[in-house]
Image (cartoon, rainbow, N blue to C red; front, side, top):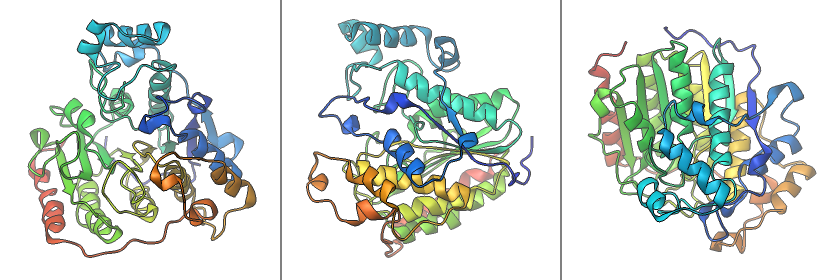
Length: 381
C-alpha cells in the first residue's frame, strides 16, 4: 500500500494511562521518576487536549504480546508480578531482575499497558491519522528476555499491527540516545519495514554502527558526544527526510526518546527540545499515518516538557513564552535526587521550549548522515 497525503482534518489522538502514576522501578533506578503522568498532567494544564482526543490505553493480553514475544517469557513476567520475586532460573534465562530490569509492582501490567497503547494506536490509524503514545517506546525489548529497562517491545508490536493490516512500506525512526536495537533486529529480514536510528556513538547497547544495515533494511547514524541542534537539523534534512521521501511510507513510527537532551543524566548529547519538535514537524505530513512514541529520558522536567511540546507540535499549538500557572505548578511539584535536581534553572518551571543549542556540524556527523542513504539502493516493496 503506497503512502498518500495525510488527512489533516483528523484530530491527533493522545493515549495514556494512570498506571504510570506512582509506578517506579525502584528508588535508585533511573526510572524512579514520574514521566508519562507528568506529561499528561502538563498537557491537560495547558488546555491542549479535548475529551474526544484522549484514549485510555488498554492492557495487552498475553496472547497479544505473543505476537512477538515467547510464551514462556510472558509467563515468567506474570509470575514475577504475582510473587514479586524471580527464580534464579528465570533471572538467568529471561534477565528479569537482572541488568537493570528489576522486579517491581507492575512488572507485567505496565509494559503490557504500553504495548496495548501502541497496538491501539496502530488500529486507530488504519485509515489514517496521528497518535501520540508517550508511554510507548520500549525499543530494547527482545522476544525472549528483558533488555535495557524494556520488558516488552511495544514499537515492534505496533509495527506488526500495521503489517497485519497489509500496510507497506513502514518507516521506523528512532532519535533516542540509545540505538533502537530491538526494533532493528525484529525486522532484520522484513523488506517491508525500514528502521532508521540516530543515537550516541559508543553508548550501550554498543550496536548500530554506520555499516550496520540489517540486510539492507536499516540505516544507523551514530552521533558524537555534544550532538547539537545544528547537527540534528543536518541529519533531519540530509538523511531522515530524504529516506522518508524515497520510501514514500504508508506509515511512520517515531520513537521520540528524550534522553538525547542536554540535561539527561544517561547520555552525553546536547540537544534542546526544539530539535525534537523540529523532527516531529518535518515528519507529520510525509505519510498518512504517524505514531509518535516516548522512549528514554531520565530527567523529569526535560522529559515532560519535551513530550508535552511534541503533543503541542502535532496539534499546531504555539508554545507559550510563559506557562500558565496550572502548568507551572505541575513542574514545580517535581523533585529529582540527581545533581541536576538540586538547583534546577527557573526556565524548567516556566517554559516548554529550551534555549536553542546550535553548534558546528562536524565532518564525522556529515559522513554518517551521508552513509545512511546507502541502503536505499536495496529493493523496497
